Length: 168
Image 1 (cartoon, rainbow, N blue to C red):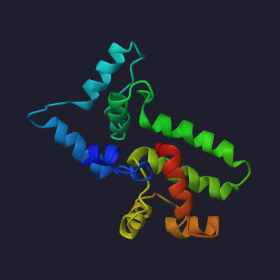
Image 2: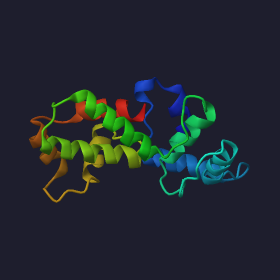
Image 3: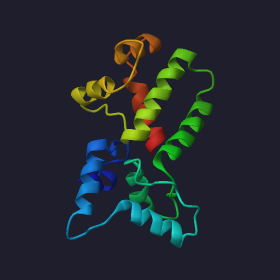
């Protein structure tokens, strides 16, 4: 299950993808639990006297943040997952210096957005990796081919690095 992925796998392999998150959300909504993640999120905001989030249920990856906050509220902030990914991405970019040109930065932004909305950019299984690229919207041509051209090689290693840095 998604919870087992979050807490039973080695840290580097704790990537949840959209379908696993969807399965978890559906499972907790069914009997005997009847848990609506958005209501749990709002309850935490109320208890912790936080500014309300517009719609925590709007982005399924917010479930990652909710589970982590429930398990470790002192170290896991209750914030929309895409916002956490964006902040970590900016930190990661700052650490990289001038390593990437504009074309590469464009593809890094696309990869970051995929991670923010899907929980990870899958790289473990070749078919999942290719399917993730097929789901990338690109007006420039076949996304993986264009990204390979921009980086001069398959960007899989950089994606794995981003998964580690942004999902943390």
